[in-house]
Image (cartoon, rainbow, N blue to C red; front, side):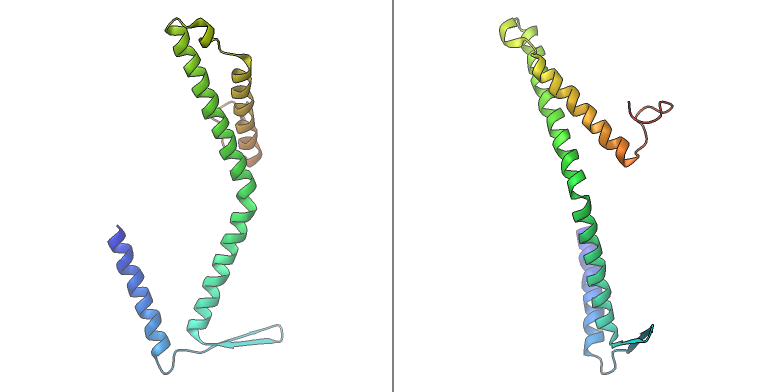
Length: 136
Protein backbone atom coordinates (compact mmCIF):
# COMPACT_ATOMS: atom_id res chain seq x y z
CA UNK A 1 0.00 0.00 0.00
CA UNK A 2 2.77 2.42 0.96
CA UNK A 3 4.72 1.52 -2.15
CA UNK A 4 1.70 2.22 -4.37
CA UNK A 5 1.14 5.60 -2.74
CA UNK A 6 4.83 6.41 -3.14
CA UNK A 7 4.70 5.54 -6.84
CA UNK A 8 1.59 7.67 -7.41
CA UNK A 9 3.10 10.59 -5.50
CA UNK A 10 6.36 10.40 -7.45
CA UNK A 11 4.44 10.32 -10.76
CA UNK A 12 2.43 13.39 -9.75
CA UNK A 13 5.57 15.25 -8.65
CA UNK A 14 7.28 14.30 -11.91
CA UNK A 15 4.34 15.57 -13.94
CA UNK A 16 4.31 18.82 -11.98
CA UNK A 17 8.06 19.25 -12.49
CA UNK A 18 7.62 18.63 -16.21
CA UNK A 19 4.96 21.33 -16.38
CA UNK A 20 7.29 23.80 -14.64
CA UNK A 21 10.19 22.97 -16.97
CA UNK A 22 8.21 23.33 -20.20
CA UNK A 23 8.62 26.52 -22.20
CA UNK A 24 4.88 27.01 -22.47
CA UNK A 25 3.46 25.68 -19.22
CA UNK A 26 -0.08 26.95 -19.78
CA UNK A 27 -1.94 30.19 -19.30
CA UNK A 28 -4.97 30.81 -17.10
CA UNK A 29 -7.08 33.95 -17.37
CA UNK A 30 -9.91 34.42 -14.88
CA UNK A 31 -12.18 37.40 -15.51
CA UNK A 32 -14.84 37.83 -12.83
CA UNK A 33 -16.91 40.94 -12.03
CA UNK A 34 -14.38 43.29 -13.55
CA UNK A 35 -11.36 41.65 -11.91
CA UNK A 36 -8.78 39.89 -14.03
CA UNK A 37 -6.39 37.23 -12.71
CA UNK A 38 -3.64 35.90 -14.94
CA UNK A 39 -1.35 33.02 -13.98
CA UNK A 40 0.22 29.82 -15.22
CA UNK A 41 -1.33 26.38 -14.77
CA UNK A 42 1.16 25.29 -12.07
CA UNK A 43 0.44 28.48 -10.14
CA UNK A 44 -3.29 27.77 -10.39
CA UNK A 45 -2.74 24.23 -9.12
CA UNK A 46 -0.68 25.56 -6.22
CA UNK A 47 -3.36 28.17 -5.35
CA UNK A 48 -6.10 25.54 -5.50
CA UNK A 49 -4.11 23.18 -3.26
CA UNK A 50 -3.38 25.97 -0.77
CA UNK A 51 -7.07 26.98 -0.70
CA UNK A 52 -8.13 23.37 -0.13
CA UNK A 53 -5.66 22.94 2.74
CA UNK A 54 -6.77 26.25 4.27
CA UNK A 55 -10.43 25.17 4.19
CA UNK A 56 -9.53 21.81 5.77
CA UNK A 57 -7.58 23.61 8.51
CA UNK A 58 -10.45 25.98 9.28
CA UNK A 59 -12.94 23.08 9.47
CA UNK A 60 -10.58 21.13 11.73
CA UNK A 61 -10.17 24.11 14.06
CA UNK A 62 -13.94 24.66 14.07
CA UNK A 63 -14.59 21.02 15.07
CA UNK A 64 -11.78 20.79 17.64
CA UNK A 65 -13.80 21.77 20.75
CA UNK A 66 -16.45 19.09 20.22
CA UNK A 67 -13.82 16.45 19.40
CA UNK A 68 -11.88 17.32 22.54
CA UNK A 69 -15.07 17.12 24.59
CA UNK A 70 -15.88 13.70 23.17
CA UNK A 71 -12.36 12.46 23.89
CA UNK A 72 -12.53 13.73 27.46
CA UNK A 73 -15.91 12.04 27.99
CA UNK A 74 -14.58 8.75 26.61
CA UNK A 75 -11.60 9.01 28.96
CA UNK A 76 -13.86 9.62 31.96
CA UNK A 77 -16.00 6.62 31.08
CA UNK A 78 -12.92 4.43 30.62
CA UNK A 79 -11.40 5.46 33.96
CA UNK A 80 -14.70 4.98 35.80
CA UNK A 81 -15.15 1.55 34.22
CA UNK A 82 -11.66 0.53 35.36
CA UNK A 83 -12.37 1.68 38.91
CA UNK A 84 -15.70 -0.14 39.05
CA UNK A 85 -14.20 -3.32 37.58
CA UNK A 86 -11.38 -3.16 40.10
CA UNK A 87 -13.97 -2.80 42.86
CA UNK A 88 -15.87 -5.88 41.64
CA UNK A 89 -12.64 -7.87 41.52
CA UNK A 90 -11.78 -6.84 45.08
CA UNK A 91 -15.30 -7.83 46.24
CA UNK A 92 -15.00 -11.21 44.50
CA UNK A 93 -11.65 -11.82 46.20
CA UNK A 94 -13.16 -11.05 49.59
CA UNK A 95 -11.55 -7.64 50.15
CA UNK A 96 -14.79 -5.94 51.14
CA UNK A 97 -13.15 -2.81 52.55
CA UNK A 98 -11.19 -2.16 49.35
CA UNK A 99 -13.90 -3.44 47.09
CA UNK A 100 -16.66 -1.10 48.07
CA UNK A 101 -17.71 0.74 44.99
CA UNK A 102 -18.02 4.26 46.19
CA UNK A 103 -20.77 6.45 44.90
CA UNK A 104 -18.28 8.88 43.42
CA UNK A 105 -17.04 6.36 40.84
CA UNK A 106 -20.54 5.29 39.91
CA UNK A 107 -21.72 8.90 39.64
CA UNK A 108 -18.69 9.79 37.48
CA UNK A 109 -19.56 6.91 35.15
CA UNK A 110 -23.21 7.95 34.90
CA UNK A 111 -22.32 11.61 34.28
CA UNK A 112 -19.82 10.64 31.57
CA UNK A 113 -22.29 8.39 29.80
CA UNK A 114 -24.96 11.08 29.89
CA UNK A 115 -22.53 13.67 28.49
CA UNK A 116 -21.57 11.30 25.63
CA UNK A 117 -25.26 10.82 24.80
CA UNK A 118 -25.87 14.58 24.92
CA UNK A 119 -23.03 15.17 22.45
CA UNK A 120 -24.53 12.49 20.20
CA UNK A 121 -27.94 14.15 20.36
CA UNK A 122 -26.50 17.58 19.54
CA UNK A 123 -24.70 16.18 16.50
CA UNK A 124 -27.86 14.39 15.34
CA UNK A 125 -26.32 10.91 15.26
CA UNK A 126 -28.58 7.91 14.89
CA UNK A 127 -29.74 6.35 18.16
CA UNK A 128 -28.03 3.29 19.58
CA UNK A 129 -31.32 1.41 19.76
CA UNK A 130 -33.55 1.79 16.68
CA UNK A 131 -37.11 2.74 17.47
CA UNK A 132 -36.20 4.73 20.59
CA UNK A 133 -35.83 8.08 18.88
CA UNK A 134 -32.78 10.01 19.96
CA UNK A 135 -30.40 8.90 22.67
CA UNK A 136 -32.05 8.48 26.06
